[in-house]
Image 1 (cartoon, rainbow, N blue to C red):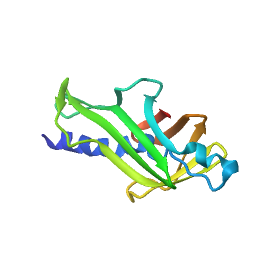
Image 2: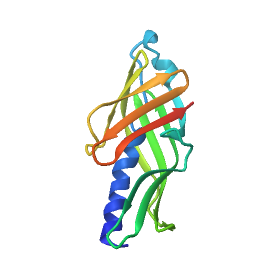
Image 3: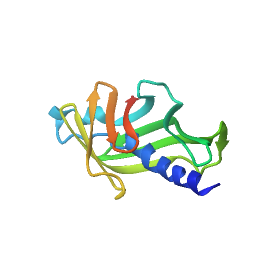
Image 4: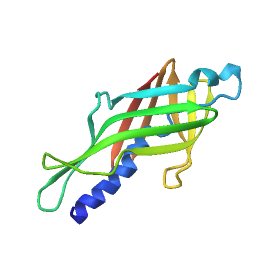
Length: 156
């Protein structure tokens, strides 16, 4: 794999967790919906598209096209902790590249009303990020200056 592809694979490891990490919540009492938030949520869309979804695409030196696609994901919430797993693929010029497994992230979460706030244990991710809990659906929008805006929806 060339240096440009390795750099893009590194980007994939940054973009993928930003899409959904923190779409979890824990309540501090019965009035804030915390108990209702617990459970496992499956990724149903990214930017209003059903996976697999291309979340990053660039033209490399020499004209090769490199893409990162999210193919599947889920978030499990419970006991004040979340675990996110995202599966993805990297493609170069229509050829699937071999990459090590998916991306997993863990951290703590809290819920206040419909606002879900999470804090990843991964120091490389931004501070706290918020999501919206609406019934059995978690929705999070992440804005990144280089990679754009992503909205991920998970459903219980």
